[in-house]
Image (cartoon, rainbow, N blue to C red; front, side):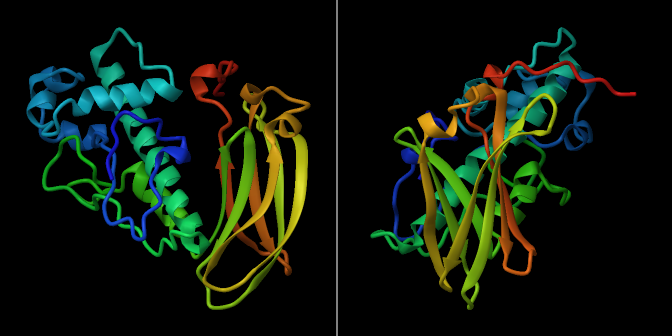
Length: 265
């Protein structure tokens, strides 16, 4: 399943298959990988090399459109700096898109679709260029591959929003039942500190299953805060206090957030 126009953060746009055998989203390789096969004139989004190695029609335009749904597009007047910023955001967008889609399929395990597996396209590259891969030509991991380690974990707490409400699932691929507590916290974008302890959810999830453990309307969830002021953190602990899974949900794109200017000492 490929849809290059939809919002990759909106899980309701994805199908409910028996097995998700192929899906993906493009990104550019890291600047270091690109630098190894290029010259300075190639360090821009619309360079002849970037266009030559983009074999998906309108692929770069689709990457840009997805970035602009959730982020401010890089606006540096220096081509090299803008290109590096674009590369980074292309990988962030790819990672969040495939994370959202994969978690959607994993939550469907106990649904009427009985979705039992996924294979995203693709694992590795044959050269340095824009592609669907999560591993670069020389073996370096893109951001997506780091995300894949998490969204394919055996125990996964997985939140999503739909129909003006928040839903929280736990996916358990272990052969044993798991029990414990999920802490839901609303964290400030600007301070990194909790703005609100939303709820503590006790759970019991059978082996080899995906279960909804909680839901709340957005009107109640964001009663004390604006959606753009922070993000949601989910921490799943077992009864021994061991962290089994953690996850995050962004209620709004970062192009809607008023971030303070960072300061590095």
